[in-house]
Structure formats: structure tokens, C-alpha cells
Length: 510
Image 1 (cartoon, helix red, strand yellow):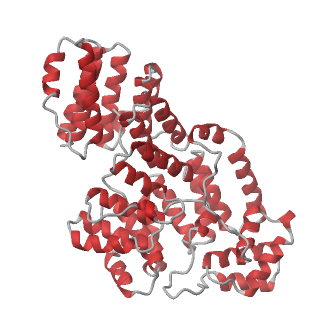
Image 2 (spheres, rainbow, N blue to C red; image 1 turned 30 degrees about the horizontal axis):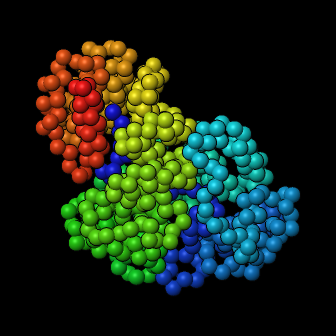
Image 3 (spheres, rainbow, N blue to C red; image 1 turned 120 degrees about the vertical axis):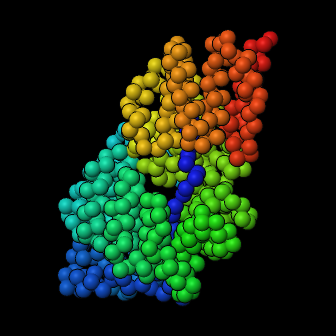
């Protein structure tokens, strides 16, 4: 059976985009409520530029000025002009940053109009990303102190599913710029993406900047939550919020993280106040966190479409899902995936809605295959792909995908239930009825042991559908059990499957 995106627990792990996109979204500027320019990273770069006016020192100063936000010092503008006067020996990234310092670089944050999900496999298999990696590696040889080059390499390698290269690149970036907010948050996302959040958490816990920068503090709290425990900096985070020293935008992620913790702890009033604060001036990550929280407990009304935010795809996808607007949810999930094509969560949501709610297995296949480019061994994506393949008349190919997974080694017990149920489906579709019954019943029993009533219902309904198809002599007894199933409003997938099973049974009676 198809597995849904895990909506039980979302945390404010930073999004991972190109540096230019992150700058355009305002996440690297000063956190002060009064505005002004932060000079973090500028003094050292300024000294190097003053002592030696080279491409490397100019690039360092320009990068520091962009990250600092606010008005760039005159020397940073001079360095930017210097870079633009030497286009043959500078990288496109350096020229883009120089234009930003001079006021000419305006990222509009819009999506490429020609790129669609169906193109994604071909896109990554073509030379585009690999050519870009080659260009960046050449640039890294010429400008070895430019941490931003290595961060972008890490992002591109992660899109291609090349984990070792991605991890090596982000470690190099961290060694060059160990206190750079963009580098640190990118490192956290890479570690979380590869299921090693403790690596980043150990770094953030021992970093003095964590307790003073709300962007880093939010990340530390998210990393702790990912590991299933509260951050040791919760009290520090609350004091920082209460100080009023930082802008609403720079504390939005932090407020949403604390609000989510209060919600899970049962403190609804404090959660509501913090979540309301988070949407005073949110970024897309904070708004998605609030939408997730309101999906668990509708403390107040919030419509993500009313916020003028670039790349607000996740919040819109979650909101559409919560409101049963299935096509809208798929559209936003597609844009979410194209924004961050290494991520698996948009593909899990999109493939589930397409397969279960919309019965569109061709499109569900496309979603899963695209995400598997970056996550080739992900058991949940493989499960959803096998489910749609089997229902689309490709059971043998589905079996080939399932053979890649040792179910007993899958740590997520809910994922094990889905994999065993999908194996039952594939067995039915390949004529192995006894094996299919055993696999389905095992999945149903394990769902009950987990006290997951929804998964037990869904696995049973998938099983009954297969028994109807093969004209089982037990179908009347099974349908009497189906008649007792009630799907709650929180179980739209079960409700849809229940309706389809009843319709299929009715057709066989005529």
C-alpha cells in the first residue's frame, strides 16, 4: 500500500537552496529589529582586500558583504566593480554577488516556466548538472577559500544522489567558513538529509553563535527534535524571543519551532501565541511549520496563499492536502520538489495523493522515479513506486524494486507495514495468491500491534480489493467486515479506498 508523507512530526530543519536564492529570500541579512548592517565576516575580508587587491580577496569581501546584509561598505562596492571588470577570470556566482552588492542583482524567485516534473529524470541524466559541477570544481581550484563554491557542489551532488561527494564538499565549506550562517545551515540540512542529524547537532551545541543567532538557534532546536528530545537551549530561545532585539522575520522559524514543541507537549495556549508570532513575518519554512502544526490542531485559521512569499510551496501543499484539494496539493508538491529536488518529502506527498486519492499511477510513478534519482535506496519511495507499478499492470517491475529492500532492516515500523502490504499486492498481481494473502494479513496484524488503526484499515481494504479481483470464495465474509469500517475525516485515503472497494464489489454482483 502507498505510504503517505510522515505528517506526524515536522521540524524547522533549514531549506537548502542556491546561495543566490537564499540571499533573495532575506535569510542571510542582519537579525536586528532596527535594521542596519551586520559586519560579521567583513573585517577580515576587508583587510585581505586592502592588503592585496586580487580576484580572491575581492570575492571574499563581496561574499561577506552579501551575507552581512544592509548597505555594503564602500570598499565592498569597489571590490564588486573590480570583479565585474574581469569577467574572464571570475565565476558566474562571483559576478552575480558583485551585481547584488552594486544593487543590480535582483532575484525574482520565480520558477522556470519550462521545467516540469516529467522532465526531471532527463534533466539530471543530461550534462547540465554535471557540467555545472565541473565548472565549480575548476573554480574551486582557482578560489580555494570560497566556501560558497563547496556548498553549491554539495547541493548538486546531493541532487545526483552522490552522498560521499556531497558530504566531502560540505565539510570543506565548513572548514573554510565555520561561522557562516549559510554554510552552517546547509551543513545541518545535509546531515539531516542523510539521517545523521547528530553530527550537525554536536557542532551547533558547541558553537557560541548558536545562542545569539535566531536562525542557528532554530536549527539546533530542530536537530534536537529530529532525534526525539528537547533542545538544551529551549530557555535561551524563549529569552531571545522575549528580548525583542531581533526582527519578526529573523525569529519566525524559532517561534514556529517553539510553538510546535508546546503543541506536542499539550500547551495549546502557549503554542497558539508562538505560532501566531511566527506568521507575523514568516519565511517559507516557518509558514510550512505553522501549517503542519495547524493540521494537527486547528488553533486558529491561517491561509498560506495570503502571504506574499517566494517559494512557499510546502505550506501550500500541506494546506491543500489538509483541505482535500488534491490537484492543488499535487501542483504545489511538484513545485516544492523542483525547488529542492534532493528532498523526498514532496515526492512522498505527491505520489501518495496521485496514487490513492486520484488513482493516477502514471503520474505517481513519475514522482517516485524523479525523487529516486537523489534517493536511490529510499525504502518508502521504492514502496510507493512498486505500489503504482503493480496497480498499473507492471507487477514484475514492481517486484524488481521490492527485491532491492530487506524489509527486516527497515527501521520505520510503519514503513515495514506498507512494504509488506505492497509485497502482498505484487504477489496477487503475479498469481501468487497464497503468498499474497499471507503478506497482507501479516501487514494488517503488524499495523494493529503498532496501534495504527488507519494503516490497518488501509491494508485490509487493499487486501479485499485483490480478493474481489480474483473472485475469492471468502469475499462475502470479507465484505461483511468492510461494512463495519468507518473512515474518520482524518483518514481521507481510507475513505476513498473504502468507496472504491464497495464500487468494485458492486460491479461483480451484476
